[in-house]
Length: 325
Image (cartoon, rainbow, N blue to C red; front, side, top):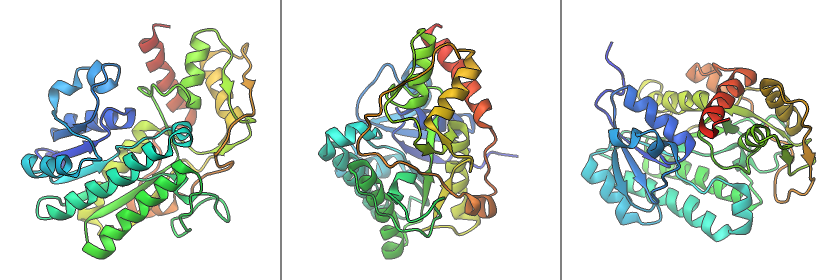
């Protein structure tokens, strides 16, 4: 059977990020025509390092520039948009909130407005929100009907992203769906402040991993290929199941503390001889967050294909090769 994505023209914002790379890779393999909106040419990102960039169409533009986004949709005749582009580091958001708001909030309403202007072209839009959009919720796990009430800069930006997407559905019937994922990890993530790549790199360098919190913060950890499948299912669901305007949680429903995820990485790598250094100095982060993914299971048929141990084994293998360890 022909691929659903064959010959569709798909715009990915954030394609130089590690999740965007895995999504672009899958879509290229499915024979889609992939367009990547790129602000900065980063030779270290997977899209460029692997040569995948030669198999897609690259448009140099900034999400904060509406004219550039609108021109891309029109001239490339885009029918599907995956909006992943964002400033995605909590620590950076704490230091530079204006930068984060410009990228995440302005970038999102520019994309949504451009899609509205070209609604005859754009048939499906997937917006990457986050579990952070819920803020400090009244109960755990988060369900999709809970209020979005971020308090810190990154969390607020994601609450706004989510609400903007809902606004464009309810007001203009833009065919948009929203993905609220837990912490996504996998090969290609070069943001070493994140616990999974930071821990793996430290162990490969024979150093003790660093934990910025007290190690007891609880999170969901979603392997990147499972997240990509979630995004793809969401896009197709607009055609098949009339899910436009809805939000979906994606998590393994097996929350772990930071110390537990570090422990699994140590086990996978055989480095129990290097216990982590716990700094307990984190600021502006929610202590416990994890998701109920029942809606995604029942309406989309989504569930993780990889356990945490399997996902981390694949991730460690990628970093061993990348870092020459």
